[in-house]
Amino acid sequence: MATRRTFIKNSALAMGGVVFSNEVLATVSLPMSGRAMGVQLFTFFNEIDADVVGTLKKIAAVGYTEIESAFSKKGGYYGMKPKEFASMLKDMGLSWKSHHVLGAPFKMPPGAKLPMGTDGKPMVIPPMKNLRDNMQELVDEVAEGGVPYLVCANTPINTIDDIKNSIDVLNKTGDIVKKAELTFAYHNHDAEFNAVDGQLPYDMFLTQVDANLMKMELDLAWAIKGGKDPVEIFAKNPGRFPLWHVKDLSKDFQKIEPIGNGFIDFKRIFANASTAGMKHFFVEHDMPANPLQSITTSFANLKKLV
Image 1 (spheres, rainbow, N blue to C red):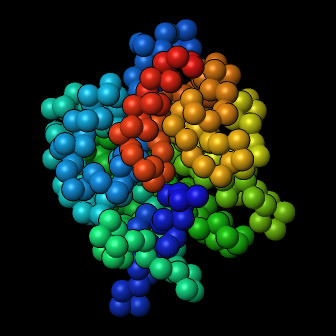
Image 2: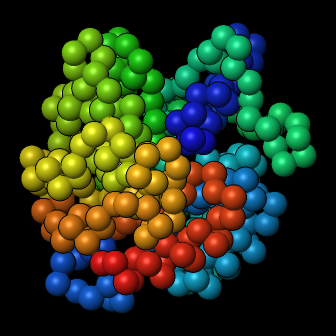
């Protein structure tokens, strides 16, 4: 299954001995038609850089009004400065709510290869800034763009030392983000629910990073794939989940699906939005064959399911 985490880990670039890596609810009572629906732009990773304006116009035409950005093959904010990208979104009636960044860089594993582009050649991807090495710069850029949420999309968690180092970075980032009067959050994959020396990385993040400094962006599907019930996670940590990622899964957990084409019970999860403290949710589909078709299906089905 092609995922953001796999992509980031396999996209690490070594340059000059330095390793770089590429990587709404106000209340539950409102009808779905009255809630803003967002898209995580990683869904369009393989095509957005060829036509940023055209891609965003297509997203807006479906009915989405909120955007969460991610890394771009062009570097920066899809080849733009933060204010420039924010202005373009505003002109299209889109609201830039959140931006994903890397926590700490991943080292290129032995034998790993860069992902292939549509031309059949290895992708040329600019080095991606990360919170460990570029913390203040990334916070300043998000603040410049007027983006209320900065999210750590991924960070090394293979060993206890990895996790402890990541926790240090997350706590420091949360402090800087709070001083900038923004909100910091952590986004999970399923790996955070796999035990490392008898401990779950996700539980360590919840308990060892100050809740006043870091909220969570729960990726519902990855949590379920990791063997966890989002509703139970919300109940144990009420109010800590202002952001959600919404995608569906096949019954065998091997394929990401547009919302409504898989098995996840979104009615039950969305009924607990107030417990979670959810403010915004973003539809995402990692590396889909047809991104526009996928988010169109998800938009229509979400309206029916929730």
